[in-house]
Image (cartoon, rainbow, N blue to C red; front, side):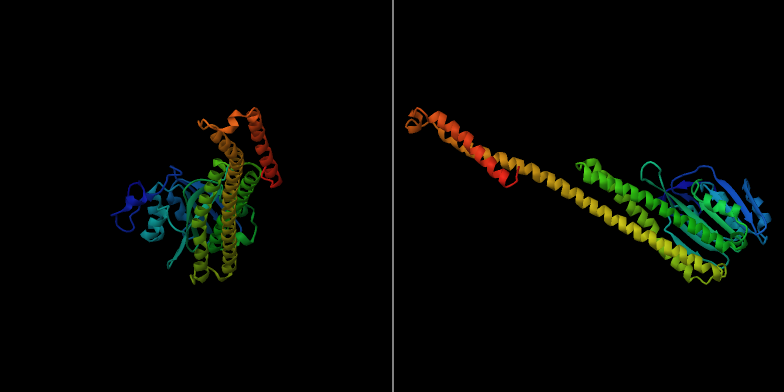
Length: 355
């Protein structure tokens, strides 16, 4: 199979299990890292060929292979052939629009979910699909790009002297899931800062179009985050119900902890969504209040000038027999009336606190 790129619609008409990369190219060159460890030793190296993995295939040590960049379809196809992975699983690895899910097979487990990382300067979320293949002593992690998501986990492996490196591939899979889910808490902290700053700006300054755009942008981001995070709760529930021999009984308690973290993340997302809805209501109320103030001023001016316009209209008529036109003090008296009416109305409006 040659390397190919396509959109989701580009797979229409192809046979099930056809291997073709679907999605945005986040890293054009594939990078492969191998970490092999046991309680006594650890090997970490970047590999250029999949044949370098074969020496660890029948070993009792745990081997973790990180593949960053999915454009080289032949690598995924070769791994499938080496370890007997079903073609539909390989197809899901290359299709980066997958919904988070867990699938159980006789000799391997397949997990796919989204890794979420926020930008440093503004709250924008970067997404990448992370697929895990869990075998007896192997874990393959397929990522769309190279980043520091697994750096804390790698550091734990390098410094661990006991428990971590003495456990199997299922515990490694748990640790990867825990790292991905806990990254969402960092994302939520950034989201909290963005919402707090937006709330302060909304309450202190006059609402404007930029404020509305910021609220709508955060709402879209939260909807997208929720779409990718919510299915992880179902994924963890399926793992907890699994009776696969690849998951040791002692690992379930750790998976339960990841499930609890997932629920906390989802609840926090719902809370922030409600906060943004409240900010939108405050924005609408602020705009309405501002409009009311404008209408109040216009009403005051209209109330002042309507009686003056009425008087002007009367004495602007071209009738010959109008007694006031012959009076000596008619003009000064009319001006006194013009001045008195606004003063009386302004005093009334001030008492009513309209001004």
